[in-house]
Length: 296
Ligand code: GLY
Image (cartoon, rainbow, N blue to C red; front, side, top):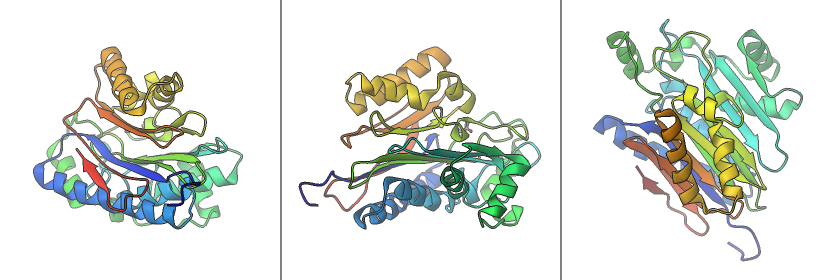
């Protein structure tokens, strides 16, 4: 990487929680694939926005995660997806809530961002926007993984957290930042429920002057503390990112007692990640590296 260019960075997460051993291995492989896909975009000169969209699409296509094709089911046994994306260069942002029949909601969120006027679409309006943007619908069954169908059938009183939400933050070769997050939300959630992953400032935030963040965990609690933006505000005070991520999660835990994890990037491309759950599988590639490092 030429010394006069900012170092590119990609950091992805596969959700806070505790996965079964077989799923843990699948998720480790999945986050590595996503980080590598994003890295190819970065070293090809792609933007941070293109990078986080690409990485999150890989995770949405992977049934090991609670997003896209592996999303958990709501109380009615249906998939409803939330996603958001933000461009740290311009503060442009796009999001969708509780959308159905969309295999890659992060791409729909990016289309919302690209259209420019509105930030968040839900329901029938989101569906019409997708059609106008040329994003094809899929059959609802195409998004239901066998594992999630069995989980739904077995746990009608499920209280489990949003294990497996996915997200990415990146810095491109021009030094611009972006963040994206995508999820199926909480297992057995009420139809129409929208969580933090669709809300700018809560599940996702990026500002070249502050940093970029993607959150995972109990969406209702994350919304109340506006976790992504709050964590970046701590960064602005001059803290380093790893300590900031830990501090943000500690504050969150003390105030809510809920489950959460966060990944962060500061404007210099330094990374941070923290969780208060047993696991949060992450992968990252920094600077001149070409192989992802994985942490649980
Ligand atoms: N953090 C994902 C959700 O609660 O929907």
